[in-house]
Length: 229
Image 1: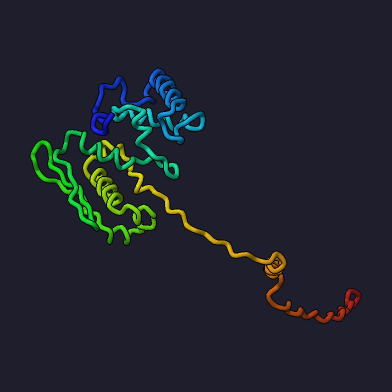
Image 2 (image 1 turned 90 degrees about the vertical axis):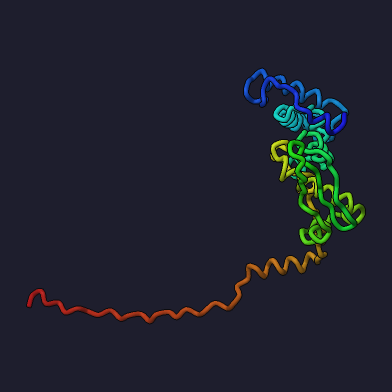
């Protein structure tokens, strides 16, 4: 199965698996089969991946695609499903809206170039440059140092897909957009006794308490008894 044939629309009885009980039960059976197969990534395997498979079946139903291909084309990053750049490239070339797909690229830039199938008008995506990648912080990913041209292509495809076929991508972004940069956090060693003293200091008063003056007692004053006067 290639990228272009995989996104060919096929007739569906329903556009959503949630519209009827029968449709949802059928989607569950499909998802269980996928979860028990060896053709899906680990996020979709077994009982823990069954729910992800159901979601993937729903996405496939709306897009008119093979559920297996959807599972293979999605990465789940921080709870967000994202398309692989290879899928987006295949979607652009296989949707029938564009022809003569190509890249205008150099060592430090890449741009998707193609023509509209109906008019022959040239269409150019966002030009991705290494300068842009550095400014946006993308180059913190080590892959930008080991395979910069590949990463430039992936970003160029991702931008073109978001701009020109957002309906086909079903509102989902690319893996490159959702990638997580893990920060290296170092914890300085400390002495337990010193730490305890620091904690105690937090509860100690910052200054000596102010002395409170005791008021002098007021002598009793006898009122004159003039009741019998």
